[in-house]
Image (cartoon, rainbow, N blue to C red; front, side):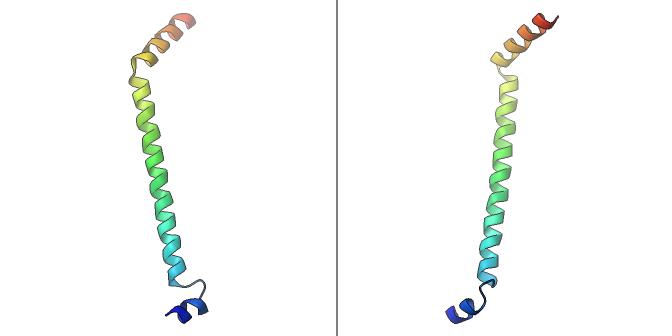
Length: 61
């Protein structure tokens, strides 16, 4: 089995590792996007943001 793997450096083992790595990076990207969206929407809903927005509107108008 080891000899077979050495004969084919780009064999099934490497493909499996690449697949797991790519799936993990996809998952990480999705998690990061979700976290960013949740944080941003919480920020938009926070009182601090509402106060800032009101102050900005008053300044502009």
